[in-house]
Image 1: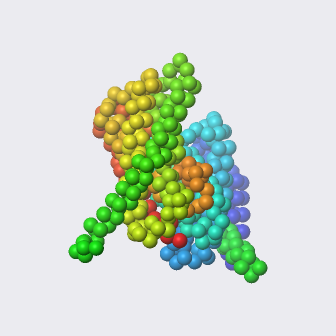
Image 2: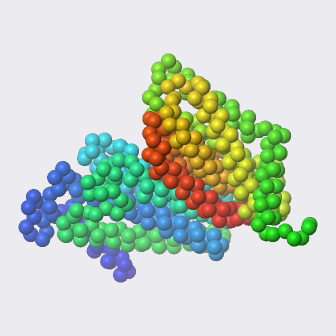
Image 3: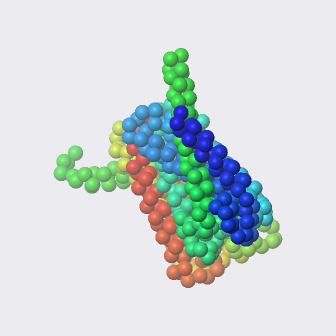
Amino acid sequence: MVLKILLGVLLTAVIISGLGLPMSPHPQAWYELPVIPGLEEKARIIFFHVPTAWLSVVAFLTSMVYAIQFLRKRDLAYDIRSSAAAGLGFMFCILATLTGAVWAKFNWGSYWNWDPRETSIFVLLLIYGAYFSLRSAVETEEKRATLSSAYSIIAAVTVPFFIFIMPRIMTGLHPGAKGDPEGAGPVVEFKMSPNMRVIFFSSLIAFTLLFYWMFTLRVRTAEVEAHNHQGG
Amino acid sequence: MNGARTPLRSFLRSVGSVFFKDWRSELRTRYAVSALLMFVVTTISIILFSLGSEGASPDALSGMLWVVVFFAAMSGLSRTFVMEEERGTTLTLQLLAPPGAVFFGKLLFNLVLVTGLNAVTVLLYAAFINGFVIRTMSIFVVTVILGSMGFAAAATVIAAIIARANTKGTLYPVLSFPIVLPLLLSVIEATRKASEGAFFGEAAGEFQLLISYTVVVVVASSMLFEYIWKD
């Protein structure tokens, strides 16, 4: 209950301040966001797009951790958690791709450019897609859990090659790519004003809480369903 | 059994037996070899027909080489494990050999298969596709060798998963593609550098990536294989 109230307040605050605060070229008051040349109002996407992309990776790791747990303990409850996290990750991955594509159309001129980060998120989409087609192909619960856990672990060990290496060896449009004057690397030093920073990190926290809430909800429904199946 | 055998030696012996079992059964039917070979010939002729008399840029051609390799590999590499399921010999193998030996035996077999396949593909491709030139042979040779190793590593563990799911071939490329994509991108990049005539050292980044990729995939899959293999 506390979580839900906190989440509601935080997300409302992030949405209102992220979309509503005025932008000015020379911010004076604490509530004025600076105008970034070339981005202007389009800069607001960072409060929503980055957290969705962040969550699709967090969900992917959560899924992998539960996959390892399943293989160690052989308890189907872990498989339920693993697939629930993957399902949410898939959803946030689609959201990140779509919001990014729409934004790219207006800022970079086309919906899709095969920038390294776009390539990485595309691969993440493919992995999630492959994971769920593998799950739908196996009928026995135990076997499905084992095979999809193994697959998600194998996928998780190869993903870092994209997230950390590809953006550095290919030139790209996102911050942190090779050719960025701010320096290349997976962790980007954001040139954000302090008030933007506050909104940005509150948004990250709010989205993570949202993920946690949706995750527990999904796990509970899946457990009830599994229980009903057994009980007949 | 002559008892005084160290664990490592007996393990290597099992790996060898699994490898030679597959090798012999392949020699009998020549299923994988002929399927792979025909696939390579078919794909290269499709590229030839679709190019017609027009030449493509060396960049595009060095990328297309790996398209041929990827799909050829996808058509034949799942064979090692699917075959066991089809013949109903999985249980026997589970009883006779430790999981690690089965995995490394199959990995070795796939490695031999992919390396042979890649050698043939590269020769045919270079012979029939005009405009595909390699200026730095050393980069290209190392790329093909490291690429084959990475391919074999990823393809073997996915084949094991596929064989245990009841889908056989259909899902194989779907599951493999996101896993081998880092490898594909690096070998394409390295091949491009080789056709542009870059110095050997300029492809060092790609080679590091290929080596670390292969090591990571082999380690992860040898740890996971026991779970996939045993019911």
